[in-house]
Image (tube, rainbow over the protein chains, first blue to last red):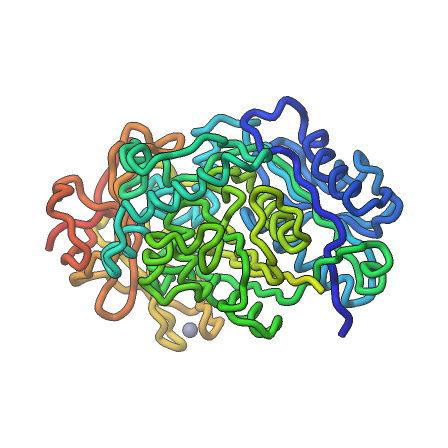
Length: 384
Length: 137
Ligand SMILES: [Zn+2]
């Protein structure tokens, strides 16, 4: 089987209250990726538009974006798996290229969350769970992840301070990422004393809502070698699902969809957790990063806290994680997040991550989750 | 009236298991059991994902479950603000059935502990709405 490569990456700055329309927001990430790949719109053979619905009023956004980005008459369509939409978009692009349908495909993610109020946003996010049997009790995303945090603490002795340490790390890197929405540092004291949102999670355990877009240009092996001096190869792809209703779950100390997706991705890439040089994980909440350490095999179940206590997930540690600030500080514009994570790892493997660079990174991993562990996507990238 | 009577705010107007709401009126929290393969479901389902039969019967969610996990919400989504603060949870029964819901306000935060015994009890809410909550046995 041929290889499939990433030949261009881009993202808008992640911001609070983007002053423009969704088409203009998407243009920013797309144009940066196209400049990176040195391509023109007519070179893109198909586009995949990824976002979560109901944050803006546009129905069928793929049609709008293809027109605005100069991508007619090529095929375009929409992919949705809430927060992991653009990782799922990458999976579809990979499949289309392997099938021989297209040689160069753009995966474009976006979200303008500020089109609606924060309370409306929480209500829509909450409806990303089971609206028939759970939403009538007044659920929202922080509460679901908080239940996982409570279970993790009870089972393994993880503490609120361990979770706060993850936020401190995220903020230290958000400060040096010019694309991040939250550019300030966070001290342990500040994180621990922030207001409770849904116990045991506090304000600083939650990611920053943001508006943003991302774009990944994916190409066949032949085209990647022809067009790019430094292609980054897709070594492994894993995807899995788990029951949307918490009553259907088998555990609350981890996400089974992430474990299953990781297993597939490691197997396909022929590598293990010990081979990963740098990782981007879906830290929509601090507990989500803690569970990711364990679900991805960076730590044994219950031992994730040792990684953060010993700073092993900082640059210079055993496995640097989210050294771009993660969702916590870089921000989480739902549909754009997976593409942004893929961009970060691509830049790391090309040695172009600037102050966030992990020296000599050869193999990187992206863990991108949709909803409260409904959809799990794990992607492993490598360079020549 | 159909399923729109379930919970503080319902997001589903009707379902083939609407009868769940009528059972709450009668003081019963009910799940479904597949007559073909015996799979038990809570929340109830009209259709069995194990054997794809749609021949199901009701069973009452009786007995004592154990608190698997919980969280106390200090913020609420639109429409639930007046309920704050409230605790949501998952309770696991001995036969493996799990149930999602709220913990009764009669149990204080300090008395909550994972593993504690709880029972599901139907309750009436304002505006003719109905639900269930978890209480001490
Ligand atoms: Zn059955």
